[in-house]
Length: 91
Image (cartoon, rainbow, N blue to C red; front, side, top):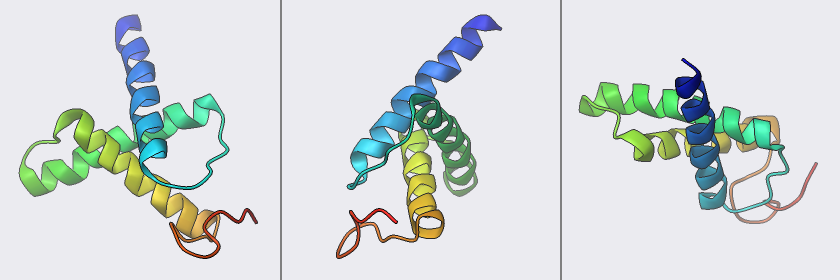
């Protein structure tokens, strides 16, 4: 059980960091928020790709899911676009 939790935390950190790296713009968030982004991305990406393709595509599906969640957070919580004018403006 401990190995599963450690693996989940490390996997969440890797997936969350890669998703933040893939989307342009500043994302000031602590490491625990990056881990939660990665874990939630693995769940969302696994569910969506599992429904569409029949399997979740592993880490790629997790990164895609985390990128989707990060985009939605920026769009609806921070009210800023992904790119273009105002993308780097913090409100």
